[in-house]
Length: 362
Image 1 (spheres, rainbow, N blue to C red):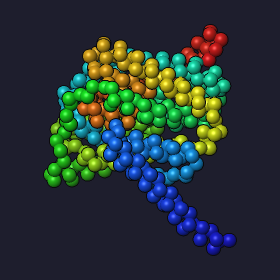
Image 2: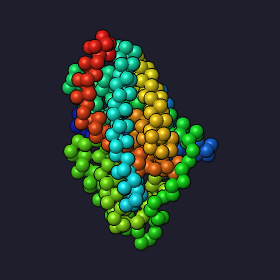
Image 3: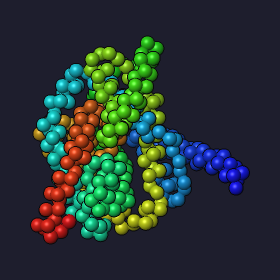
């Protein structure tokens, strides 16, 4: 029996590596094809669509361990290094608008919960936490504590993020007006290579430490704060190489695509369909709110739309970089919103219940 187990272990490892190789072969080919065709965000959306289709058809795909986190660290550090004293002050000046925008996002996700519940045929805890614009894992855990279906919540949260990633960047890049903001940091040189590598190593340690606190988006936030402190103070004037950003896009797109598990989709078809409808509602609501936000603050419409998009902060920031918009401002909107949504989720849930009682619905 022990010999069989010993023999099975290498075979299992080989199968895993074979699946990993197949996964990134699919992702790489899809990214190259999308890039050749001139598709927007080719190295993220190409792998995302291809891996999502393959995974939904039952193909077992496996990503490299820690690849999503490395991608987020890369993006976070890159965005942080873009901050100068001027951009930091400009971002902080929009704090009142960010707070109002957060309230608006909470309001339209409440509306999505009332839409989602009868379509999916689920209870109130599941409906509310499935549509709340917080972290996927965080909302699933809280929903379970409140008597909801954690699997359904996780599925709808994954759909919300994935549909936002699939739809919003394409809309912004296709119909939006590109900005004129260049990269804030100078290109990488031999003199800045070692400091940048050291900053990346420190960013990994900082992200690991922040992740222990269970704060949302630690793998993005910690490197971004580190990069901000280095960039805004002039300690490090460098930019993350474009090749590293493209690799981060591929890793993110591949990971998102592999989240479409066929078994889960088949087990919860009504919930999945309702989740698609709720996600569409939230995207439309974000667009409507962006019209008002743009008019009130003078922000470009594309920036306002990315700032109000339901989740997917890393992908929205990548879109902003491609469009030469303000990734720092978009990051500020998303990070503040996520912190508030997660910290007030229980209180807003009580409000949702009271509204449902008065309306006799939801």
